[in-house]
Length: 212
Figure 1: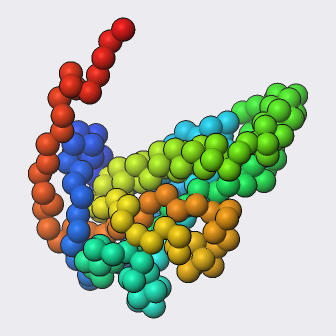
Figure 2 (figure 1 turned 90 degrees about the vertical axis):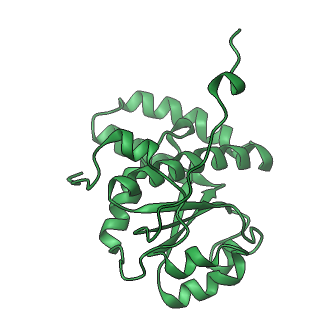
């Protein structure tokens, strides 16, 4: 991965991140760079490396108009951002298990016997999970990738806003996905900030932590 980051300072990437709701409409992120950022974001961990995150990049004016009625009070982000990134969890992510583990063997990252042993246990286990159990797994894993995308986008010189207020029961089908297989997790607006964003506060670590 030969990326040159515009912002390579961890402190600024991590602590300078704000939720941006208005973007410079003249700045468009190329599909090549968008794929680069998604590739970087998907270095996030996932349960048994099943990588259940799936992305739809809504960037054309037509697609944004299709999305607009589904995002309630977040239309400013939709109108001004370079793109809206729809993040789904794949309830049948195990279908990619062989491809993932075969690649690990081919790249010398896993012995063949380990691949066979792990897949022999993982795939039947995943297939037998309840819908709720699988839903929990894919949403947790896809959320890790979403957070990582927000940070890598900032490293590329862009900003984001995570959006949870949307019509979750309509999103998948509206964009041609099987709603039973692909569960909506989050929408991220992404683009070049046209505002500074609001400073916010966080509870003190002592308030949210206990030691036993």
